[in-house]
Amino acid sequence: MQLELITRQPASNPRPTPLLFVHGAWHGAWCWAEYFLPYFAQHGYVSHALSLRGHGTSEGNTRWNLISDYVEDVKQVAQGLAASPVIIGHSMGGFTAQKYLETNPAPAAVLLASIPSFGMLVKAYFARMQDESWGIVVSASFLQLPHPQKVTTPMLVLGAENDTIFPVNEVQATARAYRTTAEIFPNMAHDMMLEAGWQSVADRIIAWLREKN
Image (cartoon, rainbow, N blue to C red):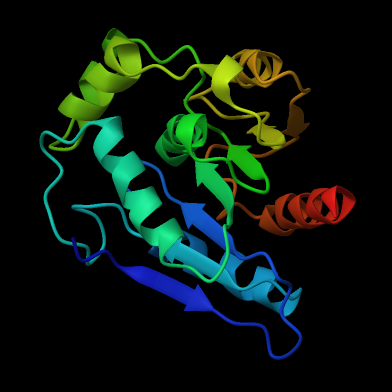
């Protein structure tokens, strides 16, 4: 399947481990291209963002996709990179990352305002359902829930104080499931990579990645 991939390269001396950004519902690779891709490239990271099938300019549609379909998209792109990437997922992309990591260890992973590890309630999303939502909401509600005990990849879990989609308590529960502690950014809403304080989020990720090295 042809998948859109936006890449930003460092000017010189790239770090050996690339980054792969995975967007959430109603988004595409474009949401990372505005701020995160150039910023991480400036800090030495070869930075890639894919559009999942049916999003951006990628092939496919969104109506009946399951999380497992998106996991295959991430796997396809990751296997085509020069080295195994750090996986950074937002919202639905964070849920996709959790499922991907069950069978595909990565150097590290970051969840931003992710669908929680225990899934989400269909009734909470019914009013927002669009073409892509049916299969995703069903699979993220009970059919394809993550199994955190299978994941060995080091993980940074970030949330936003004013996120009305996945509130702080759900982010904290996800972090506990992965045996870590959530970090919550004040005065920030769900789209953490596009909010006014996006740079503080990026800086925390960069600092954490350097700690891991």
